[in-house]
Image 1 (cartoon, rainbow, N blue to C red):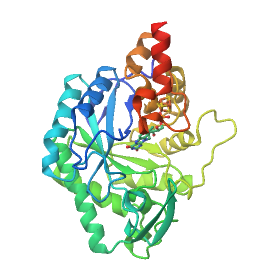
Image 2 (cartoon, rainbow, N blue to C red):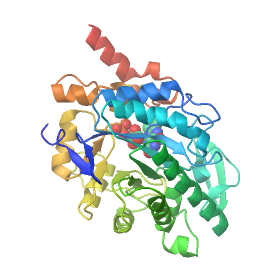
Image 3 (cartoon, helix red, strand yellow):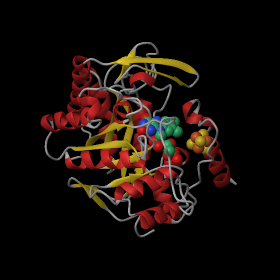
Length: 355
Ligand SMILES: Cc1cc2nc3c(=O)[nH]c(=O)nc-3n(C[C@H](O)[C@H](O)[C@H](O)COP(=O)(O)O)c2cc1C
Ligand code: SF4
């Protein structure tokens, strides 16, 4: 596990190992006001205590209307800062840095009719029909400003940085993907423009040490597009690229037959060959051995251990000590979306430990 426990620095921030807890919304914990509650604080405190090198807090919304659901954490107003401060203080006290993922759902959010989208667009998400309409230039500016103010609030709340949510079908992803973004103006001709202007806006309001990364789609719609977006972001000064899926259903995933891991990890490896900034890989990284092999084989800089850390918040410490980390059982519906107490991987690990 030599590589997994090697430190890494991002924009001068010391990260003690290559294990990142990626953003994962805890559904049902927060009220309609988007204010952080004690459960959020304890959840991230436990993950920090469990030894992850970096935590990226769940998708936290930049406007009330842009939420995925009514119980999502918010960073759209000043009143939300004190609750977020409680999370950053708890995590920092455990010696772990924390970045917050800032998010707007666009057409696939809780607003089902006439939601924001780069172009007129219809789709079905979780069985629900969604219609989006083409944003005016004025609306684009307003939403960019909401991201920029959210970046400023994140700094004031004590986060080490922000991760722009630029994948998984949400608004920024919709701008990146030319099958969704069919605009004829500069935001269509240059699909990175929406994100780049936000990046520059947050930089202008935060100190030099504040990290700005992005979660970016690898097949957006093709790998060549993901690479082009990554290079444009690097040129504009992004601090890391956390590579995941893009607008699924509009994408063209690919990987060579002999590549042993997910196509999205292959995509991260290909992007890493083209950029110098740190690249994170994600999906189905089930064991410390797999994590180490991915780091060594692909050259990526960090691995995201998502559901693995939901199963076992001490995943990193257990990996380092050579103990059983447990594993995610890849359930058809992850119970963390419904009732975390019923997480099958966690139940199994606890049973093994008790017996
Ligand atoms: C309950 C749950 C919530 C999630 N919420 C987010 C989120 O807020 N932002 C995001 O970018 N990805 C989100 N994801 C995706 C994870 O960050 C991660 O990419 C995915 O679970 C695959 O990694 P894993 O196999 O290590 O779990 C979520 C996943 C789960 C299971
Ligand atoms: S509920 Fe299932 S899919 Fe979700 S983290 Fe637990 S074991 Fe993994």
